[in-house]
Length: 396
Ligand SMILES: *Cc1c(COP(=O)(O)O)cnc(C)c1O
Image 1 (tube, helix red, strand yellow):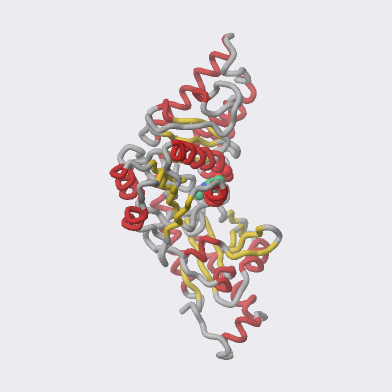
Image 2 (cartoon, helix red, strand yellow):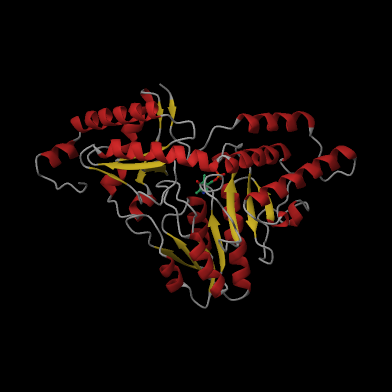
C-alpha cells in the first residue's frame, strides 16, 4: 500500500490545477505588461484570478499581491511592517515561539538590525493566549505575527481575538495562514487581519506561487525591486500559469472544505485513537483545536528519523519531529515550544493526511506504526533503561 501522509509538507496538484497550468503554459504565454492583444488578454486573466482569490478570503482584489509562495509572503509582510515601524520609531515585534522558519528567521534578521522581538509561549496544547498578546503590546510595538494554524502540530490559533486586540491598539497584525488557506474558513474582515500569507502547494496548487493579502491602508514595501508589476509592490513578470492554477485549486478547496474536513477529522480521530494504544506515547497539540488532517505523536524511546525510514519501506510517507539543520539533527522547535524535552521530541511522528484518505489506509498506518515503534524499542538503549527503571518515563 502506498500512502502519502505528508500533506503539510506539500500536496499533490489537483487535476483541474494541472489542466489549468498546462492550458496557460500552452496558450497564454503573453506578458501581462505588453500592450498588444495577447499581453492584454493575459492581463485580464491575471486580474480575474486576483478578484477570485480575494473573494475566497473576503478581501478586495486590490489587496492581493501574487508572490512566489509562503516564504516570500512572510518575508515581505514582516520586513515591510518593520520598515514602516522603524520610520515611526517603533522597533518592537511580537510573535510566537512556534512560527515557521520563514517568520522566525526573518525575525532573527530584524533582531540583528536593532529590532526587539518578543516570542510568546504556546503552552502544552500549542495555542497562543490572546491575553498574552495584549500584555506584550507596548508603545513601540509595530507588528504582531501569529500563524493561523501550526504546520507541525496543526493547532488552530484564536486569530479573530488576536486581530481584535491588535486593531484596538493600532498594531499591524500579520498571520502566516499557509496551513489554513483552503483548509479553514478565512474572512480577513471578520478576523481583523491586516496581512496574510498563503501558498498554493499547500492546497493542491503548484509550487512556487502564493499570495500576500495586505489590507487597504496598510503600507507595503518591496522585497523585490524592478518593474511595476503587482501595483509596484512585487517586481517580476507574473507567473500567470501558476497564478491561474492556484486560483482553480483554491476555489476547489474552498468549495469542498466542509465535506473534506468532516471526513478527514473522522479519520484523524480514528488514527489518534489507534496510535494512543501504543504505551508511553502522547498526542502533540490540542486534540480538538487542530487541523482536520493533522496527527502528531511522540513515542518514548525511539528516534523519529528511523521510524520514517522504516515506514517509508512500508509505503507510508510521513515526517518526524526532527529537522536537519546545518548537518545536525535538531529536535523540532515546535515540539520544544510545547514543552517536549529533546529525547521525546526526537521520537515524534507527523502524519498529515489528505482528503482521499480511507479508513482501510488508517488501519494500515496504525498497524505499521505500532509494529515499527515496537521494533525500534526492541534495540533502543533508552527504552531498555526505561524498562529497567534506570530512567523515568515521561509519557504516560
Ligand atoms: C509551507 C509553509 C511555509 C512556506 O511556504 P512555501 O510556499 O513553501 O515557501 C510557510 N509557513 C507555513 C506555516 C508553511 O506550512
